[in-house]
Amino acid sequence: MGGVWTQPVVEVRGVDVVRGTAHLLRGVDWTVRPDERWVLLGPNGAGKTTLLQLVGAQLHPSAGEVSILGETLGAVDVFELRPRIGLTSAALAQRIDPAERVGDVVVSAGYAVVGRWREHYDVHDLTRAALLMQQWGVARMAHRPFGTLSEGERKRTQIARALMTDPELLLLDEPGAGLDLGGREDLVARLSDLARDSYAPAQVLVTHHVEEIPPGYTHGLLLRGGEVVSAGPIEEVLTAPLLSDAFGIRLEVQRERGRYSARRAA
Ligand SMILES: Nc1ncnc2c1ncn2[C@@H]1O[C@H](COP(=O)(O)OP(=O)(O)OP(=O)(O)O)[C@@H](O)[C@H]1O
Image (cartoon, rainbow, N blue to C red):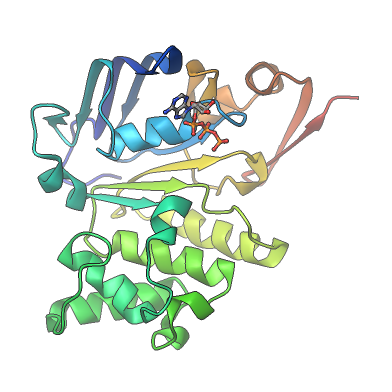
């Protein structure tokens, strides 16, 4: 797996993020390589979104160093870096105009920031957008306003948009949130295909639920109170003792055909 880029995609060294007296992240070390697919897990308030924002070049560390795609935060123009990173999150989704057509939501990513409007797109971009909408099951609704889509369709549209710029790093903040069972299973299957695609970018997915981890994800990072509980190959990290530690509750964990489930230990 992996493309021409063999250096780490992300390097986080000794990072703190501090707001007032609160440590959102403390002493975080983390390396992501191009062929890796990471799941970030942890309870509410653990710092998952903060860590994702750091590696999405949306936030600077208070201390320590963050390198993304070979560039160090603080020494690079983030506006040049951001198009190389695909990001989906509820916060970004809220910034999409509900009246904008799905096809435009996807293709406009190629023309930079959210909401930037353009009358004409290149044929190459339109072809790529059509292909991505096909892959993510939203081609049928290309002409519909984004606001009329179901939550699952919106999530898939956002992922197609995030992939539009052919990013080297894809960051997915809780893509399964708010989906019904069918929607979740459909998304997990599509994300699993993407995880196993050797031409796909490095991927980082934030979730609260081990059931949402797509088969093919290779690594896990557990956060609790802004600190890393464990990070490494997924089968070494998603164990009952480590998950229990991260969530502060005694858990049983099962893995069957690449899917995880967890519940309170008897
Ligand atoms: N500006 C701020 N000042 C103080 N505390 C903050 C600030 N921003 C975020 N926090 C706190 O930092 C902690 C980490 O937040 P973050 O959103 O990264 O957690 P999370 O793991 O993504 O949580 P969730 O699972 O609930 O989305 C939370 O306790 C949050 O309340």
